[in-house]
Length: 149
Image 1: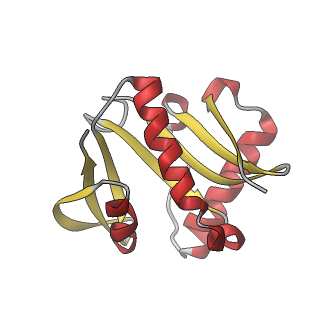
Image 2: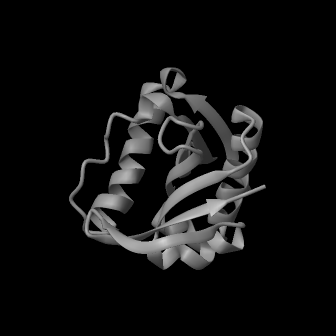
């Protein structure tokens, strides 16, 4: 079964969708990665929320920002696939959907991300190139990456 995709601005998320999104992000970014940080950062209001549903569960997610709402360029963040679904390679589907949505929804060509360093090759596969040195964000090594065109 393939994922069913949905994009919503914050104000159109149902309570159930918001709960599942926050639960998924917490499961991966806080618990699995053993990183205490403020996931609910006040930026969700500005984002479009890309959700991949498998049955009645949200198992893939990213938030999308227009130019100037997070970085100077459009951006993708909080890219996440539930642990038990990663063997299905849905992360690639998620990134293709995110890139397409940014082009369509924001009429943006260039995209900037703050990528966890261990995912550098994954993002390079999707056309991103590293810019600058690595840095720590919430004690996890990250690198700035940009996709042009």
